Image (cartoon, rainbow, N blue to C red; front, side):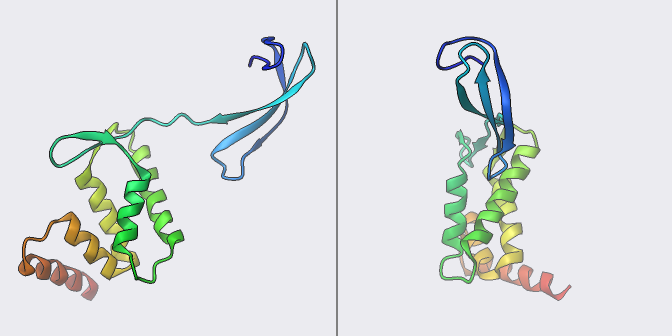
Length: 153
């Protein structure tokens, strides 16, 4: 690590601890030449994740877009923002752990629906209606019947 004060190449780590979120390591360093101290943060390098949309276009994965979709589905429902963020955290972690560089919107949508089904059935149906683009009331009813059949078992 280069000292930001004197540009010397040798520093020593004086203190090291995880940040509050646990996503990075905070290191307190001291320059062996000038003796001044400074702080660095070490963070895991994330693999860029590309989302392949239905029309074949590609764009970077956006956590905020995913969260916004879930918030819309859960609007006026008794689902806390903490639970919604937890769903996004779990999905995001699963996507990055898959080590795939590209993921389809279909796969992400299925993951969201599986999570929402266990949290709030109305939010699940709302999300499914947009995601699956129900063409008429019959396809909507078919989805509701599936949901009711699953509840019986």
